[in-house]
Image 1 (cartoon, one colour):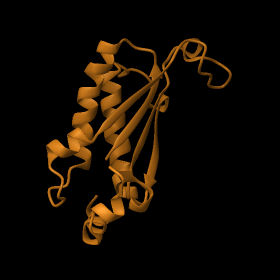
Image 2 (cartoon, rainbow, N blue to C red):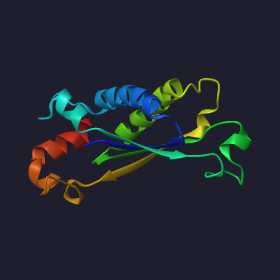
Image 3 (tube, rainbow, N blue to C red):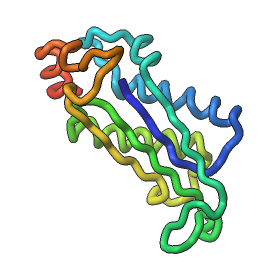
Length: 148
């Protein structure tokens, strides 16, 4: 159940709709495992993109706003269960690439795009009142750890 929280400059609703599509598609590519019991469509329907916008004067880096610095600052927080370091490296690389494209930041420093991970064990998350550890078999949890 991937969850992305994107902290970025304030944008119009239609812009967010346009950005949510390529981000959801990329998450589907990064998290889909053909050996898992979840289909691509189920994964897509369980992927959450949450925009948290900041206005001018609400975010400071080095005591300066992104406007003062001349560049937006974007943080993507990725939450999912049992993400391996290998998977996190791939997610960081690919999400940074996609965010650079969809936000039109091709000529800006990649240091302004941050990815923060929030992995959690399956016993720490429930869907529909049932812990993931009760929904997903032990073999399924081991396969995710081994194969992402």
